Length: 123
Image 1 (cartoon, rainbow, N blue to C red):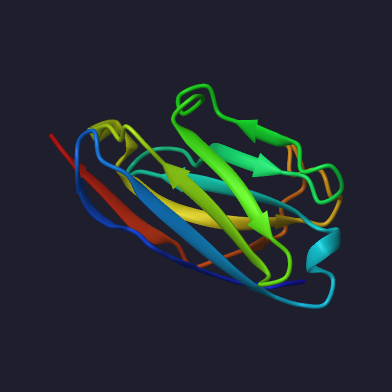
Image 2 (tube, rainbow, N blue to C red):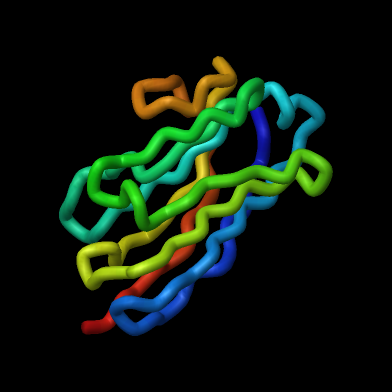
């Protein structure tokens, strides 16, 4: 398992941008696919974005495609989520997750999770 800590959330006006960070600890980090999920109160957890460890291929949920960008810095053991053109419906707690299969795809087996960071978008 790896330990994950998210940061970078906050309050932003609609149309604005935020960058979330996920700091990972563990020597197997480079073999893990990484993903971002979000969950609003009373709603199911939703896949937002993911990235493989090998090719760096990104995956995006349909609702954020074209607005969000996922990236990773293996030297710093950190995964990022750049969020542009934010909408009120993006308001949620955002979670970082690690996929030991390495794919970081929406249906991958994400086994490790961070504590979450709150993102609130005002209209």
